[in-house]
Length: 165
Image (cartoon, rainbow, N blue to C red; front, side, top):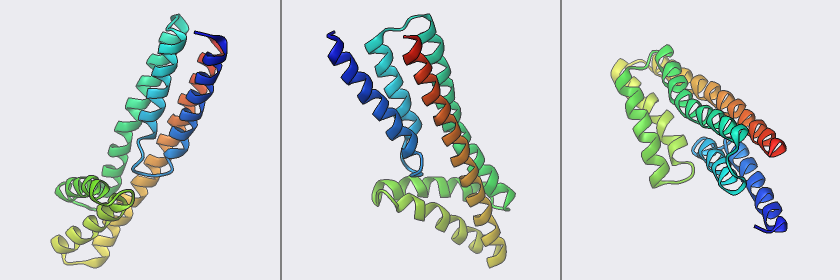
């Protein structure tokens, strides 16, 4: 591959990494997946030497961990707020469905609204339903912070890979 083409592709991969990182600001954007795919593309382009393999494995583990921690922290926040597991599962499904039916904000509206409505119907107490919604929102905020930190770490690992390459 000509050197100029490799430089252009590396810049595009770096921009894709940044899109993935800052895409994490949008709750429904799969930023960690975008970053992982960019790292995979870089590995295919540059080759997987020993350092590349180690760094790609770390990037993969961080991306998987970030995806799991997102759901765990949101569910934990909802539970700490008093929401029933069924309500949390329905909110997750409503969030996914809302995202598909009314992108990009349908899921952002559907998940919290379903928590509030279902908990109100279950408990007949608006304060307790609001507490469940607040718990979910706190979990959502913590999951964003965790995903963004992991995304920043993925970006740093890619820069190290680029430098070591």
